[in-house]
Image 1 (cartoon, rainbow, N blue to C red):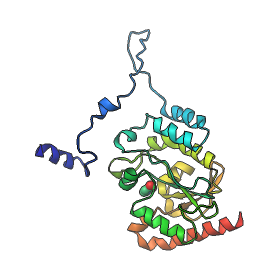
Image 2 (image 1 turned 90 degrees about the vertical axis):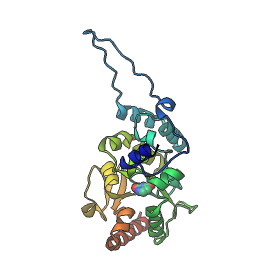
Image 3 (image 1 turned 60 degrees about the vertical axis):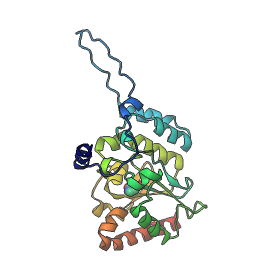
Image 4 (image 1 turned 135 degrees about the vertical axis):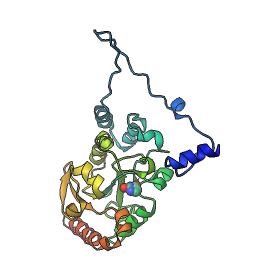
Length: 248
Ligand code: URA
């Protein structure tokens, strides 16, 4: 027993998620794949185009509740199996500003809400300095917060490009349904998903566009926790956002 535990720790397991083991192969066995017999007699599984499936599912969602349900039901992303729950969004869907982060971490996976750990507390503090909050009730001062990926990657690893591509149709529809006036893209992975570019140090602070909405790339708050000297640039970006909100 101890040897099994030591092995899991060596493999990177850093937390127990339940008292008893869960056999996910039994719980969430994927639907059996159709096995067409080709003319050659070779039997091959049909490959599912996960991006096309995501597009179809996202497009069919008529409102945010339907989108959340569609994402809950989406079974092509492996991250879902390792996560506790879907992390959809927090704040007010009618907010003028939508924040797009990268992916849930441990705290977000536990609570089912984006940006609720240390980085989230810094994010709240940053935006409160320009009068914006996820708890505000009116659209002018509210925030709406989501992530590129709705499930926690194992050990908080970076999102893989295929995972971003697979979940992008849901993010696009999320933006279409929430209709923010402005988007803040937090960090490189968010920029990669929204504008197809990385290099946050050069991108930050200048407006770009995604899905017809102005986007302001900013340093991710987790980066600011590690690199406090970069808070100066983050403050400049917050003032850029505030100025834009006053002029549109
Ligand atoms: N980092 C993110 O990008 N999103 C979260 O929800 C939490 C941490």
